[in-house]
Amino acid sequence: MSDNQLANKSQAWSALFSEPMSELVKRYTASVFFDKRLWKADIEGSLAHAEMLAAQGILGAEDHAAIQRGMTKIREEIEAGRFEWKLDLEDVHLNIEARLTELVGLAGKRLHTGRSRNDQVATDVRLWLRGEIDEIALLLNALQRALVDVAEKNAETILPGFTHLQVAQPVAFGHHLLAYVEMFARDAERMADVRRRVNRLPLGAAALAGTSYPLDRERVARTLGMEAVCQNSLDAVSDRDFAIEFSAAASLVMVHISRLSEELILWMSQSFGFIDLADRFCTGSSIMPQKKNPDVPELARGKSGRVVGHLMGLITLMKGQPLAYNKDNQEDKEPLFDTVDTLKDTLRIFAEMAAGITVKPEAMERAAMRGYATATDLADYLVKKGLPFRDAHEVVAHAVKTAIAQARDLSDLSLDELKAFDARIEADVFEVLSLRGSLNARNVLGGTAPDQVRAQVVRHRARLA
Image: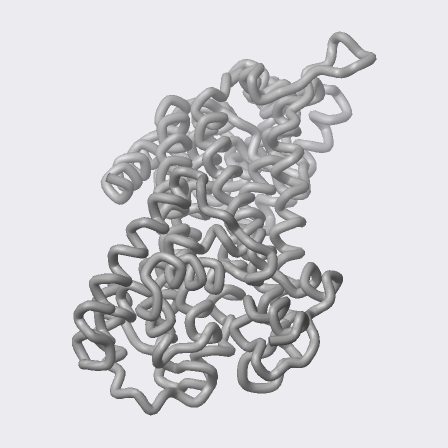
């Protein structure tokens, strides 16, 4: 055997080639140092494949037992940090297979019967991602619970509700937080839906055309807890829709996190002063000793762009690929892995941070008083007195204009002054013009009245239990 052949022997496909892969190409094409995180899924999938091969009479009982023993040893080595990951072996699959062959001999080589790295990696990524989605579901649940707890304590805390970042109408701070609970609830629904399409088995599609061995793919799917088998071998090995769909769902979670982050940043600023975040989630300034910066929300707002960028990268990765598998698909893993890591870390820290929000109700109420937040309530009051809404809107606009000129709130105007705008106005108007009265009046399903907030808290707690 020539030196070139010896150098190339470690490659699974090396017999065809007359010279070894260059070191530069080896580093450029290898994925082992990022895809080794798939090792658990790789072993799980391999054991299910071996069990099926044995059941089908394709693999002998002794070989099957040897593969099981060898995989147990490899698992122990990886968990103990003793496993040697080799660049020459390119990826997680060949590293594990080579070690298995070292441990059990020919049985290790027989494991690859009826499969290819193409369907193997597609299976591994799906198994791994399924587990990550399950963890993300728990983290979304924890974040929702934290927000519900704060919302329940603030069912009657008055916050200025904004449109166009202008004071619009008073809302309960608890109601505002429950809006984010609704967003994260939809995110959880999307993740559960994505999981169904992730949880399908490509294994047995082999390289692209299926295999001549009498495989029982449904048996492997049952063993791995997968809900279905990919029905077309070409699609099975080349499909990355599931990764793109997950990344889209993850991007929406991060968009919701980013929106919440923006509000936390605004609310914590001196211009608002509505809340405070615990010191452990903030940093100081290297030059300005008075600063307390909301670094966690700011960084999360930035990381949302990172996750959305990964989604765009995956879509672009797939858009020009002909069937079936292409080496391009190796580039799916790093953005997918980073999306998962970023999302999990962000959800974990936000659940803890949300639970420790310090609310400043006096500052919120003062801000609500500055924006004529009960103007719509006055218009509704006049409508109930028989005035068409458009006319009532006009009357209240004149009243607000007068109050602004005098630097007074609508509730500061006397009854006679208010009656000058419309004779229908009576003494009961002052209950309408109060922030508390405005809040309580919106006692309709989905409204901001404290009773509605408490009812929604009960609903969410039952859903999240």
